[in-house]
Image (cartoon, rainbow, N blue to C red; front, side, top):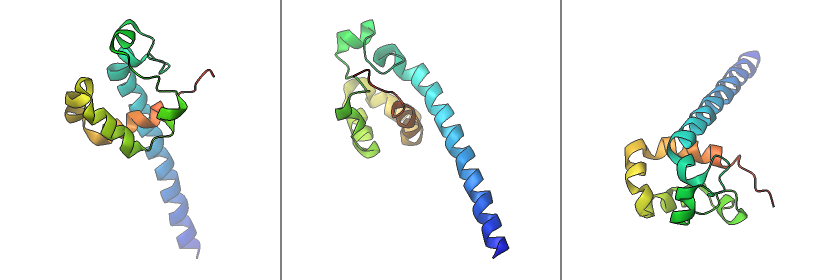
Length: 106
């Protein structure tokens, strides 16, 4: 019994650290690859974002989509197709984890 509890605690702590590292990587990827169009707050109000009419990533309609729906949407847009192939779905999922932390002002 004690051994089982010990392993549950160890694996739980490992999962927390893995999630933390993934969120940190997602923040870096978003800053490097997404913020120039989508803005650091996800609003899409950068010059490039306005010109391209990028969606506000904080909007409820975007936030309610599943991760798979967002990955699919990223893969379908011309601006993102090469980006998805170059960094892969695992890293995109980390970026989506960060995007989920963006909050709308409304």
